[in-house]
Length: 427
Image (cartoon, rainbow, N blue to C red; front, side, top):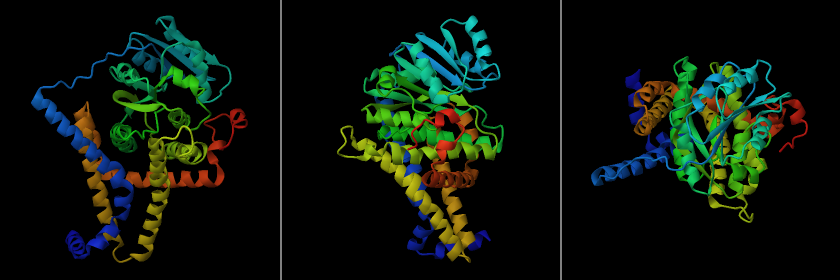
């Protein structure tokens, strides 16, 4: 059977081969492989040059602004103590504000017990849930720190994470810095293993490339740093879901640069069921339409006073890869199934091998930049299964994009309490 497939591949014309690999060439190769390879090649040459000249590659922690770490959560009594333990004492000029957003499981009590034996920890109890944006904003009047660092209450910071994430703030043009989110439970189940590799590919390496092109459009809600003055200028967080991406777009609109600290790492728990993963990604993808195509579409207006070419490139990247080519992918797949009955299996196997090859290349790039190659190599062993995983994600993505275009579904999601949704502008 494999021999027949090899014979079939050798018999098709080059234009037919290109047509067969259209989804790969249009959707995933330019976004996730070519850019990463160009970045790696530049860094490899630079590293060789430093090796030959004896130059150091040390990243000194010289910038030390005052920092307030905000831990805002709902019903996280089981994890808040561990998160506080990973944060407290990891940076000299730091205070911590815990915001309990109307929890019913005693989260504030656990945090208060921690605060009694640890200095510079403040716990705020909100009697009524207002959503994550409301909780984050509630912390701002209680600190005068120069940098606000947000950490999810179910996450764990890696060594030196706070030091790493504040270093780009030495540049006054930087308004926010994205940390790197990696899996805390990568080998718990197959689904967490697949997500763990996706995070390395998309968040760790993918955001490096976006940062260098100055088109980084997201600071993860799980771990990100914001200049206090910049937050005050844009009036804090707006109502979510997708409040982290919305804030970044407003900061870009205000003229700030968004930076990345790839070695400021935060470990987080990943969804352990396909249903929970589907709903998570569905909520994430709504923001593509709500913010990039509606609320902040003026970033692409060349006559706007805040116009920058990098912002236009960022929006075009989102429109092209997350909307236009996404529908083209599913249209192509439907066409393939409808018109290629005899060779359908061969065509699908060809695409699978090509996608699997991409993941192997991505793994090699990840290992080049990795701080823990043994761990990341073990995570990367799942690469042959990634094409099937990404097919699932594309299904969730097209579902979310379609329902948000047609129904504005994000504004009926329980991520934001109903009493808040009712008075929110529906973009």
